[in-house]
Image (cartoon, rainbow, N blue to C red; front, side):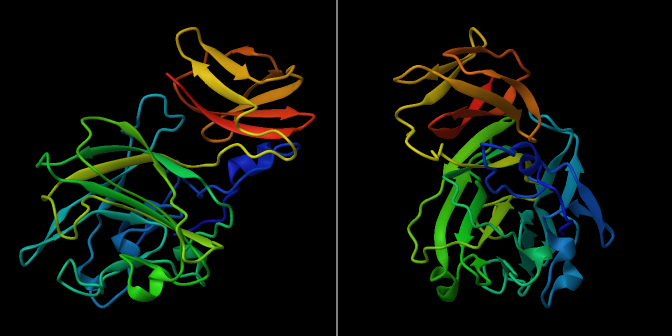
Length: 315
């Protein structure tokens, strides 16, 4: 379910650097009561499902204190596969949309996640165009050949469903999808969006995490921990600066951020952590000392020519 949240970046990035859209409660720190248990704010699982078989729903998501090294938060989400009876396995499922439970056959099209665009509790508005989606997962499975799944779809103002039916396919702007093997601990993953259409202007994003890539696949008690989901935008200039002219890198050996530019560096920088807190500012130079806790950070650079945002990873 959705609560009205103030996305941290929108408050702290006033001035020369414009905030770009992120998913509410992407760090999975906020949880709320749903039916007999709880679900993460702005995300949904089986307890908030719709469909003819909701009477058979059971909780398959929980708040966990197991987080990756360097996480700025204290919570992650855990989803798992359960025995639903009658020889059916129900995969764990966390989505920005709403789960539709319509069949006891796992692969039946009546079982899907759907963006209910008229209901903010079961949809996520997004008009920006991210280049990739980054997230942390820890996937434990009984069979090493099993694969979990993440899929993110940018779509227009239509009640898009995943898996796609023929009608939904016409409304896709871009897709980022990954099936991944058991991880043996926390792993950071980055998946690019492919802007293949056929739609051209997105209004919403539907993101789904599942404990198996195949409906009804895997084994009972396979589990996925999920944390710190981010939409990544390549640096955009407001005037002449391009990615080839200005870029940064993190030297984790010397704890220095290196800034590369063809001309004299003249401007300011600000560094934000993954939840939007400003952790360091200063005058722009080719070498910026940065000795911080491990994790994802965003470097914002402002010059007379414009503004850029870069993602770095501090080990």
